[in-house]
Length: 299
Image (cartoon, rainbow, N blue to C red):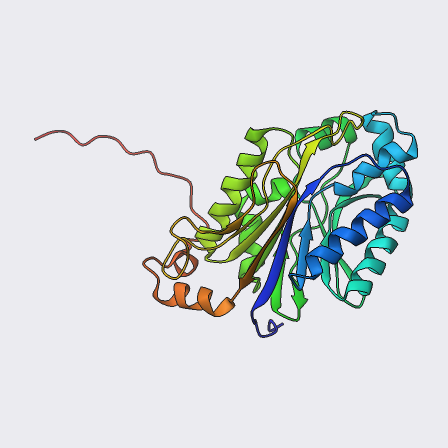
């Protein structure tokens, strides 16, 4: 299928401050206020992985990781309905954070909804699980990378750890994605830096845009979101026409708030066609196993 024509879009990426939530209504009001502020500055908004897990305390999970997962899975459909209502109300495209969904077979998957301004929703599942997800929660890998047709062309989503695997993002770019959204949730500086460095690498090697949205702040009343480290950022190629480090916009470390940038696909086209390097075009494809070489006899 031919991708829709790409055109500029104003993007907002949120560093989401985790707070104490008293009820689902309290969470809905927080979401509405955050999206209202974001929609005032952008047309496409991205929020972090597992941000809605903060409702677990209001559901009586008592800082127990397994209980938090079960509680949020139980209300995930209702949370998604609220997310869709908020996107419609503010007339914005929204990735509102990822949700754990329990299937009819009992397995849980981490799913990122992309909601259109009309409330229509599609999902990108997280493909590669972290140790916490596998060992503490039993979350299962979801569907392979997808691409999403939007009014601004085709985009992709790489949920947190997925951004650390080049082939996952490359698959979306090969299918026409010129922007990749990376909702993340990391509890150490090392964890965030893995996502941060990977996102910058994905923007460099694909000559595309990447928007990173993390959870931030401490919440000792929660098990899953007790510590959160990161910064929101919007990244691009490291080449002509872009910042020398590829960082188009970024917020301060571990502080909540939106960052915004207007992203023009034509700038990517120029870099891909006549950059100092042509990473996108020169991608080597599958590499065969290295051949052992022996030193030659000296003359």
